[in-house]
Length: 440
Ligand code: HSE
Image (cartoon, rainbow, N blue to C red; front, side, top):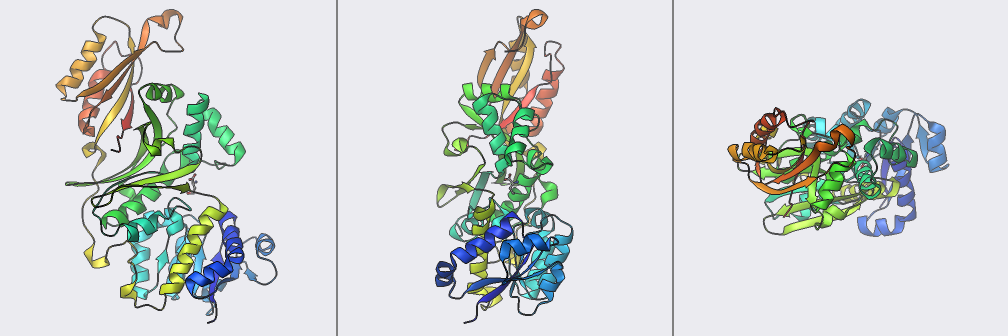
């Protein structure tokens, strides 16, 4: 049978990785797919770069629409990224009857509903394994491997840049700004790292996972997003003394009232495997009612790890493209007519436990006042630690850090208690609040 022909839009790091791995492993891949898979056309504005990456036997153009218009192309890979031209081109490829493989988490988290509807109407597949956690086959696991389960929650380290920064802050005791610069120097963080450090990239991925875990539409606009820019190495140190590490987690959790969808720094017990995922690595925990807790670990970015996911999608499509569309795995794991309307809960309704750090005057009765406010709010304390703050001296020497771990309570209740504590004259700085997930 003639090889399936693939057109590639955008040949940067992941595109060239995809080309190279397809070439290197073509026999293995063909034995699995039942048919050869060849990238025969590449579009990139930088045609010289594209030519250098793919050699003389591939058609190189600077116009993505020439790829979409080519009747010989069966599958289009979109590796341009972003919500702009990438969206137009994906919709045009779908309209032209092409199957699409994309690594574009931003596009799917924001416009997935429109794109999947267009693909279903046209009877084509839009595959996106590479959009979440790079080389980890988490989409496959959620959509197929765990299909027997009622998924209860997902918690993932799904941004390598921030995990690298947090790991360095913890192991070297360095501040965020210092480590960010180092991460940029080493190529772990981009020149404009905003999407990574502000949690947006992780929220895109959490949004996609929430949709396929619970059969709800992608709703990035309802996700709570908080990055790591305000974390201090002091809190990382205190957390460690209490037996926790701080990780940027993407969390999607089913509750009777709705779905929690949130990205923020979280204390995680150091004894959990996921707390020990360090550097730029990713890991995702999934809790299913039948299977229990599962954990998926690997590289969340990079040329060949991401290519591994892109090619897995190419193989899936190659096997399934002649199948009746109704027999294929639905884009969001659940049949389009069986989607749930469970709402995404506002942050005020989220239930979690907390780490609080208060810089207080070291005076009689301060602890009693603080714990009294928590008791009034019916917030139960799990642990308390008092530490002489490292950097205080002279006039400030009569200050101390009060660190409190709480049990679960609704965020709205904690917000109200925090406001009361903050107004105490003996609380001298803004209170630090970091959420805590036991992941038990
Ligand atoms: N910038 C992402 C990360 C990789 O740091 O994990 C692509 O999503």
